Image 1 (cartoon, each protein chain N blue to C red):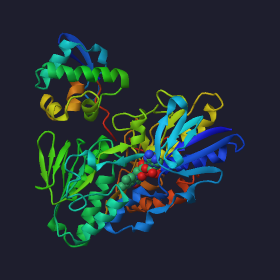
Image 2: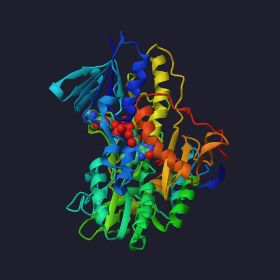
Image 3: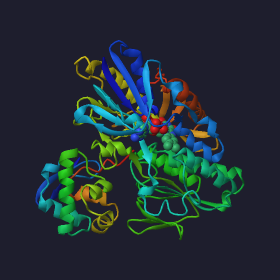
Image 4: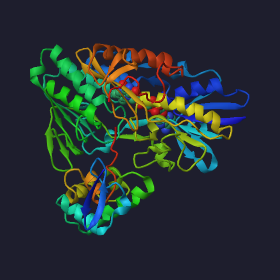
Length: 410
Length: 104
Ligand SMILES: Cc1cc2nc3c(=O)[nH]c(=O)nc-3n(C[C@H](O)[C@H](O)[C@H](O)COP(=O)(O)OP(=O)(O)OC[C@H]3O[C@@H](n4cnc5c(N)ncnc54)[C@H](O)[C@@H]3O)c2cc1C
C-alpha cells in the first residue's frame, strides 16, 4: 500500500482528499488527512457576520460531513514534519505517520501578536479583526452599540488571504452605517501598505473610484510599525500617524508554525513550491497547495480550487513516473461585495490583470467583470452554497481551471 | 522597454521603470540610479543592496521588507531611513532588480 498524507483539512485539503479518493485505487492507496480542528469554517462568510448579514450557524459545519469514505481522518495537532525520514509527528498518542507522498495544506492564519501594541489591553475592545470566527463575532457586538467616530481598516502585512476582503469590509461598513442612519457620524479610512486600493492597475483604479464615491479615505503605502492603544493611533515605519476610535485590522498572516519548525517555509512560514506544479523546491515527494503555498497569486479559496484541479491531473501522471504536463496559471476569481446589494467580479492570473467583460459565458454573463452589478452580489451569495455543496466535495464547477480570455475586453 | 544611458552604459529598463537585466548592473550604475532618486550610497546602503542581489539570485524575486529584515538582518526602521518612502521598491530599483512582485 502506498501512503498519501494530507496535512490540513481546510478548503484545499478537503477538496484534494475528495478528488483523489475518487481516482486513486483503494487497493493500492491509503489516504490520511490530519487536522487539529473538528469544525470547518466557511471563512468568506466571516466578512458578513459583523453586519448581521450572516449568523454564526451560516459559517460552521462539522469537517466529518465532507470527508469521503475510505479516507482516514485524524483529529490532532501536527507537530513536526521530518522530510528526511518521510514522516510526520502528530500530538495524538505521540504518533509518527509515514508517507510516500505528502501534501501540505495547513493554510495561513492571522497573527495579531506580531504587531507591537495590537494585542494590548484594547484588543477586542476598540481593536478588532474579522479574519477569525471569534473576531467576527466580537466585532458584531461592538458595531451594534457603536456611536460613531473614526473607523480605520488597516492591513498589517503582505501577503494576506483574500486580498479584497478589507475593501469589502469597508464598503459594507459604509452601507451598514447608511442603513442605521448614522453614516454622517462615521469617518471611514483604509490604511494599506499597497500603493492604492489594489495592486493591479485597472482594478485598482475602479476600486479607488468607488472608495472616493463612497467618501472613504485611503492612506496608501502605510506600513504599520506599531499601535499605540492608549492614544488610539496607528504608527507607520516612516512616521505617519493615523488616529482611530475603532480599529479593524487584517493581522499579519503566517503559515502554520509547524512549517517553520520543520524548516520548510520562508520568513512567513509559507512553503516555496513550483508555481506551475506545486512541487516543493527541495523534496520531490512533497507538494503544498492552498494558502500554505508561497505562490505569486492571491491566497483565496477560488485559487485553491483551480489549483486542485491542475494538481490532481498532474499527480496521477507523477505517481506513474510521467512528466507533469498541466501548468497552473495562477487563476483567481473573486467576487467583491461593494455594498447596497451590488458586487464586482474579477478574474485574473499570473500574467493577465483583471479586465472588464462578461463571465463565464462570453458576451452573456450572467456576471459582469470589473463592473458593479446586482447579479455579481447574488454570485457572492450563491458562493456559500457552492462552497459547501460543490467545491469542498471536489465536484466539477462550470468554470475552467485555466483562465480564459474569451469574453474579456482588453 | 526603453534604453537610457546610465554611468556611461546603455541600460535597458522594463515597463515598470526597473532594470530589465540585472546582469547589466555594476557599482557605478547603482550609484547613478541612487542619485537619480536622491540617495547617496553609504556602507549601510550597500549592505542592503548586496543582500537583495544575493537573495534575488537565489529566489528569483526582489525580497519584501519583511524578508530584508528577518533574513537580511536590517531593521525595518533603518530601511525607511536609508531608502525613504517605499524602501523595498527603492532598493530593488538601485540594486538593478525587478519591481518587487508585491502581493495580489
Ligand atoms: C474574511 C475572509 C474572507 C474570505 N473571502 C474569500 C472569498 O470571497 N473568496 C475566496 O475564494 N476566498 C476567500 N477567503 C479565503 C479562503 O477562505 C482561503 O483562501 C481558503 O480557506 C484556503 O484554504 P486552505 O485549505 O489553504 O486553508 P484553510 O482553509 O485555512 O485550512 C487550513 C487547515 O489546516 C489546519 N491546520 C493548520 N495548522 C495545523 C496544525 N499544526 N495541526 C493540525 N491542523 C492544522 C487548520 O485547522 C485548517 O483546518 C476569505 C478568507 C477570509 C479570512
